[in-house]
Image 1 (cartoon, helix red, strand yellow):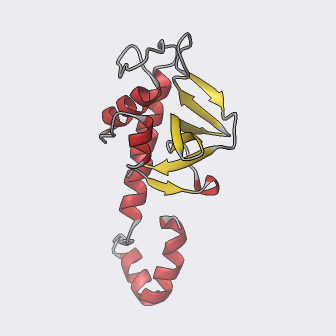
Image 2: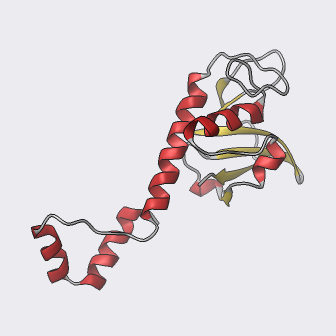
Length: 157
């Protein structure tokens, strides 16, 4: 539930008089959990923008930037620049964020590609079924459509 969806129920609990008083004096409403949602969105947006800014950077196995990347190196670099530290490998990164459903995914979420229980690739969700990622040797950081259903999603807070 987003912060905006919580406002009507909070208003109902607080009462109309409280809401009108608050509005009259120019106060603000503190919404539990809204700061976490907002800060996660800001972090994710920043990380996504950083990854996109690396478009065309060459893939290099084990590279963590700023000019060359492997898949988890790109996500590590992007989130670090946005203010959050991630572990080094895709498999380690899978254990860091809050796991979410495909329906809950948002731009800036991590997308983990797996075979069975083995995570082998990671990218940053860009919306519309696409990710920013560093695919493999001989390629560059690019925006690409997710090519399989064998993915899991994670949200970094």
